[in-house]
Length: 180
Image (cartoon, rainbow, N blue to C red):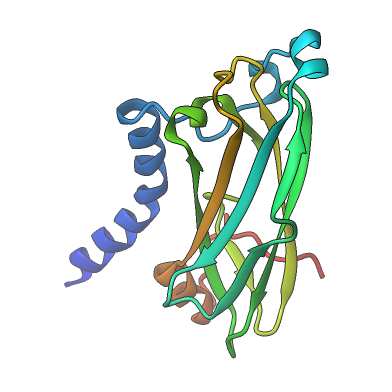
């Protein structure tokens, strides 16, 4: 039984890297990239505007509120922008959650480059705690001309294993906590 419990715990930690691999290798979706991997074109920056819509939600097992601080943003390809999401723990104890992003339409996902993101990093919110969570992104100037709107959506899920470890005082070192 101990072996099964350890295997389940290990599998929970392996889900994030496996998800990244599946998205990148199987579906061709780039999840995060650094600024050095994005090229800018001055002509595209001056002439083109794209609407980015933001969406956020939580799984029913997670007693949090999670939403974007603004619904849309007009952006120029090749420039970096920052959007904020607001998260609040409405529960009566500390809970660890993980966000899973998606970009629509799917063909735009390889042109939407997140340079900084809270996704895939365990987020710990204490009971009653609220926090702004930034995401920085660049829309690649090579985005097909017929794509005028991109939707960035996040869904937060409760991380049962890390929440259980947190309540027993054995939280993993990679869990992000709010600064005191």
